[in-house]
Image (tube, rainbow, N blue to C red; front, side, top):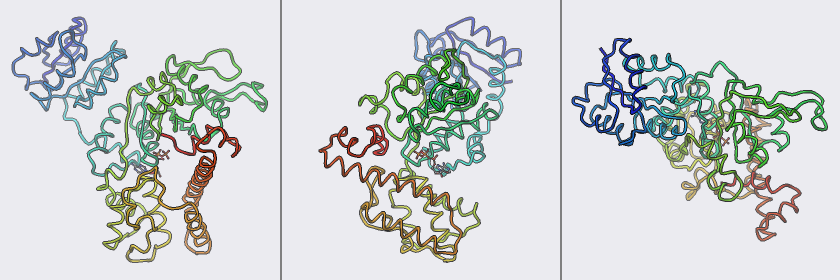
Length: 468
Ligand SMILES: Nc1ncnc2c1ncn2[C@@H]1O[C@H](COP(=O)(O)OP(=O)(O)OP(=O)(O)O)[C@@H](O)[C@H]1O
């Protein structure tokens, strides 16, 4: 018979859970304070514990640590009010299995949770879900910890903020959160807030009615409406204008939004996942991002480590990539060392692109040698460079790129057009960066003047400079 511990100062909740679990033929011990918990004998007998995180005489997280110390096998669930969801996430990081929000809305959820906890839980469930979602975890503890936490949060109605350098897999993680959660049958919609103009972004998100503005010839539902109870992934959230940020804040606070041109509010049940490659706290300090919006978004922050902090995953990923495509990559020792030492400023995206490039250009070569790798990977001194430090001059980057495109065009090998177009996008960004930096030098750093000279908005300058 399973042994369950309940710790909650609200006696009504204690009694309710006791009855519920006793009806499931579980052995229940209920205490209503931290001090009563301290007096319990034989804590190691418990299979599962339901802990309130707000006890009058004790911090529930300390209790959790104590429980995990005395009974490491005991699965803990913390119970929390909405305002303490952040604390609940901290509890999961401390080893809790799950959290329950009070007031309880669905008794079945609690029953299922108790059943699940007292059965032998498959600890690799999150890893399986990652495989199904196409997310590679490798062997690094940081990635496993991250996806383990994400798996537990996947079915929760909490807003999630994903941070990570460009190409680390923020979109991949957002897709995982959707697929592994209870919303997987509902729509998943992703939008890049930096890729489209301010007015288009608003209209995409909130929709518009016919005649709301010039060109609005039909009613159009926005993503908040289309997503219904699914997931809305707002990529590059820092790029949303102040006006859009105000509207997003309203949706997060009330679940309500207005279609452009329609005075009647609408409700959305969409779960919001936002991502940014720049540091939003810094953006708040600089006045570019609303503090209240950050507060609403940052209930749970998942930070993806850059590839250079999990280099041990590189060979595993190459193996997986080759297996999936039926390739047989073999590297000379120098080339293998270059892969391991290079800084990978573009993270997983850069690694994928590099493998795609090698498979296109050197498909018939038995061994990939150092001479087949781009200069930036072998040039000494570039190993430690990070995302914000360009590795070669703008001119040589263009020369290399045009040579690569002409070589590809003239070769009979199959060409990955998607990859080529992505490289062009990167070149577009680098070109913009180069011109902006040159103009900023001419204007002694005056952005307003630089924007005028270049005929673009200051916002666009911020976007292209990837400001963090
Ligand atoms: N964990 C992963 N498993 C498999 N592929 C990954 C993983 N992470 C990233 N990738 C690959 O790297 C590329 C970039 O991933 P993604 O678009 O999710 O990154 P991102 O952090 O959202 O980038 P950006 O900041 O530029 O929007 C994609 O091709 C994706 O398939």
